[in-house]
Amino acid sequence: MTSTIYHRTPLLKQNLQGNVHEGPQIFLKYEILQPSNSFKIRGISNLILNCVDEIKSKTKKNVNLNKQIHVFSSSGGNAGLAATVTCKELNLPCTVVVSKLTNQRMINKIKKAGANVIAYGNHWAEANDYMKNVLMESLDKNTTEAIYVHPFDDPRIWEGHSTMIDEIVETLSSEQLQNVKGIVCSVGGGGLFNGIIRGLERHNLVKRIPVIAVETKGCDSLNKCFLEGKYTKLDKITSVASSLGATAVSEKTFESATKYNSKSIVLNDKEVVDTCLKYADDFDIISEPACGASIHLGYNIDIVQRALNTKLTSKDIIIIIVCGGSVNTMKDLEEMAKK
Image (tube, rainbow, N blue to C red):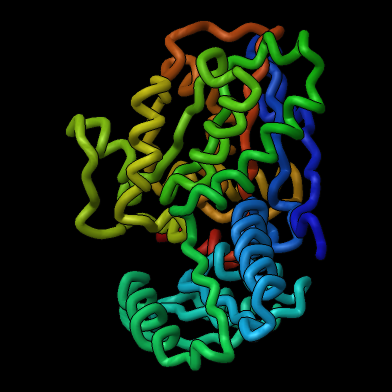
């Protein structure tokens, strides 16, 4: 079986500061170049591959367990697309259940990638419940083995995401690693954050390199946990950064963020959308607001310095995870900017 579905992505030094040369070196980890256009495929594919191996291991022990494997995902966003791309590579059927409010462009992309797409409910929870309690329960369990793919809350997903830290460590020399002052990542449900923490733990860097978690106002569930000093949830999502649209981060995310003194940054929609447009103009790459939230800190190092409570020099390095995503087009960004 294929050992990995994801690609090793480049870590490139980029000048986001224009003619300003006083700030730190900015390195971008280009997860937007993954087969599904986002980091999600690292973790989602790892989960699916692990489940397939477990099922095949059972089959070898009992020939009567030779069942058809069917993958189910309830994400109408980048996780659903990652599951679909993975299943196409493994030649497995995939059903993605989305809410009726899901972006039509994403539905079309998921269908084009090979999944059967079903629209149900007015939000992710309703779609997820329908998928698990109706569709998956109605399967003939004598002939079909279902694999459930959560968008972010599974240790096997976090383990897959952690491989980007392995690549970062391999790319940077030990001397350069000493100069890394922070890793910036966007936070929705916390799967990416958890993977980064797991990778830093594996390389004994977690206490030396802080993680700066970026959210947008209206999707700021981790920040709310920090403000209230306990695990809590948002009542609803109000930000345009729809792929950050989790009303709660995983409990592991808040636990790790607290344990390792991670930094929490909340941006407003306007500044993030403006950054997406600027980034597109500078690099000819379209990023959705969820990804642009992290890129915004590369253009505004003062925010990073305040979060870290330190003045950064030209010897220092900040790594930004360009997490990718396929939700928005350039036209979408321009319309958001007008609003």
